[in-house]
Structure formats: C-alpha cells, structure tokens
Length: 405
Image (tube, rainbow, N blue to C red; front, side):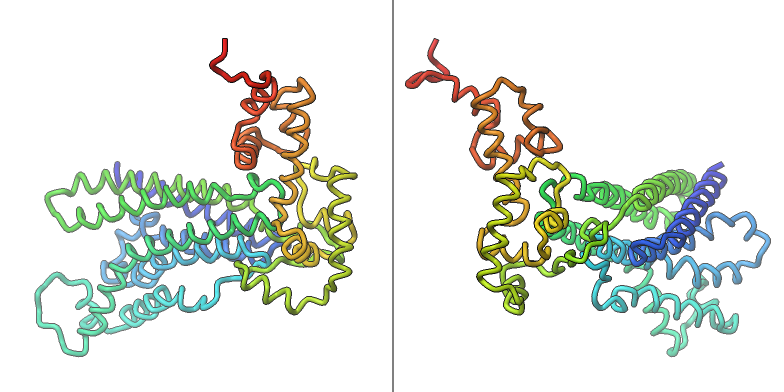
C-alpha cells in the first residue's frame, strides 16, 4: 500500500510538472522567467521518475536500475534548489536577468550527471563498486570517484539550506526595490515564496529523517510510512509551487509599452545609485522642471489616490523618463517613489480624519491605500498614532486627556 501511494504521488507530481512546463513554453511574454520556471519543473519531473516507475522497474535487472538512477535521480536532486533560486532571481529582476556565475550554481548537478554517466557506462565489475555492500578491497583508481560520489550525495542537504537563505535574502532586497516602482507594494511582495520556502524546509527535514531511517533495517515499516508522507507532502509542495508560479509575472518589468519607460537598476544602495546618476544627461534645470510636475501630479491631479499607481504610470502621466523621475526623487525631493506618494496619502488622510465623519476604512480607500492594514502601518509610521487614536486626540478639548471623565 505504501509503495502504491509513493507511485501515485510521484506520477501525479510528474503530471503537474509536465503541465507546468508545457504552459511555460507556450508563453511568449516574460520568456526568461517562464524558461527558468520550466527548467525547475523539468528537474522536479526527472527527480520523481524512479518512484513513479518503481513497479515497472521490478522486471529490470538491479544493475540497470541503479545506473538509471545515477543518471536521472542523482543529478536532479542536486538541481532542485539552485534552479528554484534561478527562477526567484529572474522573477525579481527588473530586466529578467539570471544570476551571475550561473554555471557555478549548476556545477554540482553537472558534476553529478557526468559522474553518473561515467559510472553507468563502466563495465559491471567497475560499477558494482559503487553499489555493493560487500567490504571488498577498493582499487586505488576508484577511491576518488567514490569519495566524490559520497560527497555529492550528502551535499544536497546543506545545499537546500544555503539556497533557502539566498532566496530569503533576495526577497528582502526585492522588497526594497519595489518601493522605487510602486506606491502600494502588498500585491507584489511574493509572499507565496516565503510559504514555499517554509514548506521546503519541512520537506528538507523529512528527507533528513529518511536518510537516517533507510540505513536502519529494523525500521522498514516506519520508513515506508514516512516515504509515503514525504511523497504526499512533495506532491502538495509541487502543486502549490506550480499553481502560484504560473500566475506570476515579473513585477519590476513594465507591463505596457511606452517610449518613456526604462527598466530600473538591479543594483541597490546609495553608491550604486549615485554612480548611475553621474552618467545621466539630466540637467539641474530639467530636474527642477520634473520636480514641479511631480508635485503638480500629486497636489492638483491627486494622482496619489490611484491604488495601482506605479512609477511607469506616473512617468507616462507627466511625460518624463522613469529613470529621470527616480533621479529627481532621489536628488531633488530626497524620497523614494513609495515614500513620496504615501506622504501625500497620509497628509490627505489626516485632513479627512480631522474634518469629516467618514469611517477609517472609507478614508483608507479614498486616499489611495488598497488595504486597511497598510494604511494603519503607514499612518502610524508617520504620525506615531493609529488613525483612530489620531481622530480621538483631535476631538478632545484642549487640556483634556483620556483620563478625564
């Protein structure tokens, strides 16, 4: 029964991955993001082939199965974490740029594939050295590949932990980059990847437990149960990842064509920004003119009330380059796009709280916020009070406080 569950979950995982690959390859927009996700799903499918076809493989000699697993399962296990990292990096890049030194990230998988093919193509008396439990003397020439084989088998566990760290760090930087482009970032923060990372960490822990159990012959039944649970959790993880991954577009890439739209920089930090602006052709006079247009867009046109306002929408509205607007915000106004827009939202919210009886929720949407929680957080960060406390303080007579009856 446990074997059947493992086969079914592995087969379902392959089916979901193949569907995701087909969908990604049919997309013409955001091709690099879709290609990166398809590569990750391809490795997921390969990694599940041995378990999905386990009963078919029973009729095949063991030495052939072992060689097949070396070529398929062994390398694919080392490709899951780095390829998901490549997808996250490409998705959060303003130019759909893949990580630098990509070959270094994929080197363990490539080395495992090469070693697997060498062992699989070796004569039987050579390849059995890698699978036999017989403590026979090992020839000197075989020591190095056996050591590499063992190290690569163990490397998958620290590798997953390393890439989980890299993904979290990338997402933290990405959240900062969003503030240069969006006035409301909640819809673009890719929180689902944090959930996937958490589930991945749980799955990683289960895999570690399995590695200990498989070497204990007295725990065969327990091992099969845990393998079944691991298969079910792996299927859920792949299903959720595929569902959310296929819905994503790179948020830092403009989603409409406009001659004034330019990609923002993938580099962060004041030094990088200053280096970029040193090469800019924007004069002080032009920068001042853009600054006046920016202020007019907020004060007269009330553009901050648009909950979906982005840097590119603002650039099209005032007829200026998005890079020039970023430079003006940084050098003349001294604020990020996010802080610039939300300052006007908070200022108008304060006026409405003081002069009207509108509910806080109504004011939230009227001034441009798309969620009550984001309004509360932004308002408290600026005023040190929640909107409700701010209104209550304004309604109290001078010299009175909350303790006065």
